[in-house]
Image 1 (cartoon, rainbow, N blue to C red):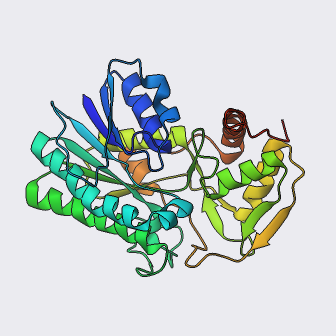
Image 2: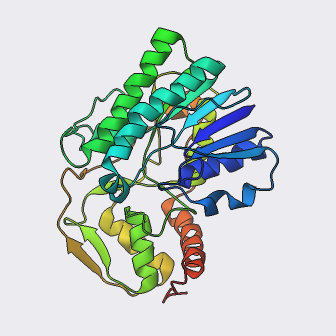
Length: 319
């Protein structure tokens, strides 16, 4: 196949580039590097099956040649990013999705949308199942991301129903692993960076809100299985093992060997209190479930963060 990956220089997108190339496919990566990193794909530059186009998918583009599969992963994905780039986040979820679907229609390609557990908002249903419509504040600061993804899902289904585009939708829950940015702002990158610098770990609220963390290799495997399926409605992909933020902080302190203390700040507006995927559908449909627990994935992630900090001339105080 020839696979087009928008946001292919991002955290998850770059891992998808690796795995499709490893499977023998050609990969076309489109990224404007607003949050992606050239470092994530630098090792692919010499691969003749890999092509990079620096472009904002929110603006029209018609790539040359045949395309068999499109993975639309372009979007700021962490609160620190979509609060900094609210208009760009809305544009890539709306215009970017429209443009990517237009390419899929023109090339008769399969299309997979990277949606998010944030479409469930601050949920009243726990764990979250695909049939739940969510509890989202459309005008709050997080609405720019939540509603962009909800609109993207609606647009994807419209193209499927009106134009017969062969679509899939993955709802991604919290993911971690190598290539996350030091200043990503999400819990695991923030805690690891703070722990390695010997700084206090900043927990929001009382730290009792929960998240479920899926290692990136498991996530990519689930996405690739979904892409190869014939299922069109949304599918949750994530790890159903649930942790409080305080439990996560303790795990990070253990993995880093840091003696940092945990401090508390006020909870951001509309921050979800609970997050846990129901993956019954993925188990049944894709024969998929995660294999790596948080305790196993954290040391791999910490090792990558130590190396990344050295490259950025930020010396870790632990390790």
